[in-house]
Length: 164
Image (cartoon, rainbow, N blue to C red; front, side, top):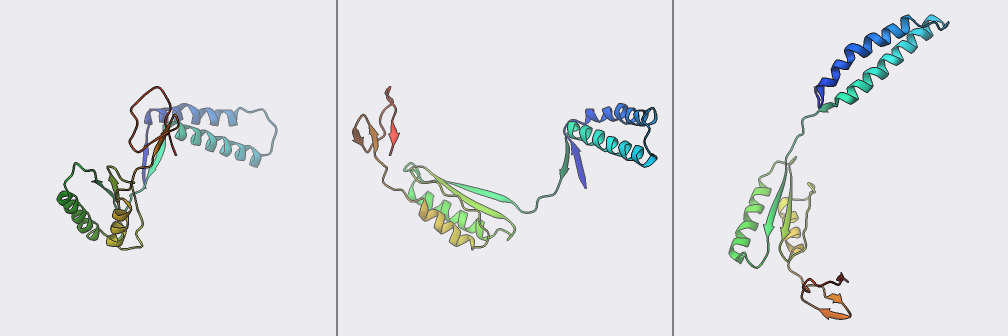
């Protein structure tokens, strides 16, 4: 198991806290049975150990299998359609070659609705075609400002603009 501490310097506190817990148990004047005394000692020791490990930032590192990959596609008008198609084909090929445990997603931006999919049950090609179709440009929603309807984004004025 791989353990790691974010602040390992706090582990030096164990050099003081553990002997103090033992001393507290041995020097206590409380009249209780032996099993209760040792139970209290064990409980105190576990609590002190847990607190110090938490302060030191104990982390358990587990190896993660698989890889998550996001493809970013620019669908704006500044990118020629040939380059967009080449990018789409590259993403299709790359996602078809991935291992079954790997995950792939597509994020299209630029005058489109972003679409991300991370399901591994469907084939990569179907998943990509669906996200590509969902990112097709749509007509912009109108903006309403001061009772005027406009299809273009208004310039920054002093008023609040709400999208309906």
